[in-house]
Image 1 (cartoon, rainbow, N blue to C red):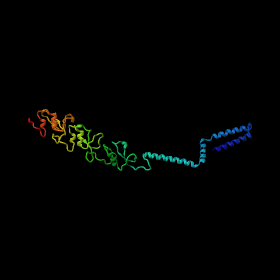
Image 2 (image 1 turned 90 degrees about the vertical axis):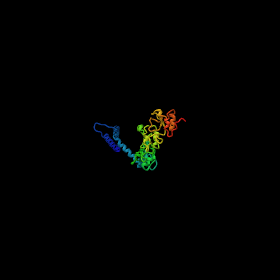
Image 3 (image 1 turned 60 degrees about the vertical axis):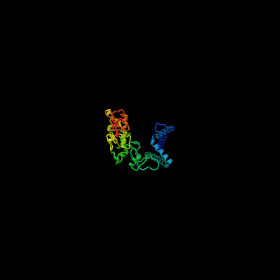
Image 4 (image 1 turned 45 degrees about the vertical axis):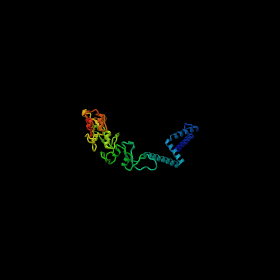
Amino acid sequence: RLAAHSRSSLCLQLRLRNIASSPPHGYSFNYSTMKRAAIVLFLSTVASVDALGFRDLVERATHKKFGPAAATTENAGAAAGLQDQQEGRQLQSDNCWGDQTPAVAWHPVYSAGFTNGYCRFTVDCNSPSYPSEAACCKGAYAGQVTGYCVQQLPSPPTTSPTDAGGLDVYYPDYATAWPEAGCLNKRPMPSGRPTYSTMLACCKGAYGGQVSGKCLSMLPSPPTTSPTDTGGYDFWYPDYDTNYADAGCSNKLPLPFNNKNDRPNYETQIACCKGAYAGQTSGKCLSQLPSPPTTSPT
């Protein structure tokens, strides 16, 4: 395009020279005037060349100078950089390093915390893998008292308080009022509860002062409430509800007071009589012993 404009300018310059050699009537030209006019005309013609056409011309010239090999090398470098970025993103998404990606398996979800933790079938390089969901729950959440992981199984174990489906420990039922509460082994176990190996141990440890005896009454074979050696508590207390002269010591269930320490208690009945009724002239407390001593003045 630039060459075409140059030819046009040359033609115009020739015309101006012809005019100068044979000027119209009334005009006079000299060679210097004609040269200035040609230069002005040429510059105005070059200025009309648009920038896009000039840039195309430069790009073509550059391509011819460096050849197709330079463009091929540049494209190959860009493709290699893109591949490296894609591989980096893949490593970041899998969070794995190495040539091989681990197989999909069951993994514990540590981000959910231990209490509400569960297992997910995924690829994870930061946690142990298990062949099944049940194996994952047993291996990663064996001590989970809430049982949340096993509850997510397609067929979770029963939550009824039986040996097969219940927990192998007992805990106090703090959700129920104290006089009516007992010990449970239901799933899931609330957090923050003490545990006991047997229901009887739980009743003694968590409801030792329960006067209603509700916890002990829930045992498979609850103890009798009659004041005998085989039944009742393993300690004795004075019977303050009876007149002093006619009172003795008892281990009846339930306790007639709120807590065990509300009254003095003794390991044996005779120790209770000596401690609580030492000055009892009627001898009523001692007379209630299985083998009472003689009351004769000997």
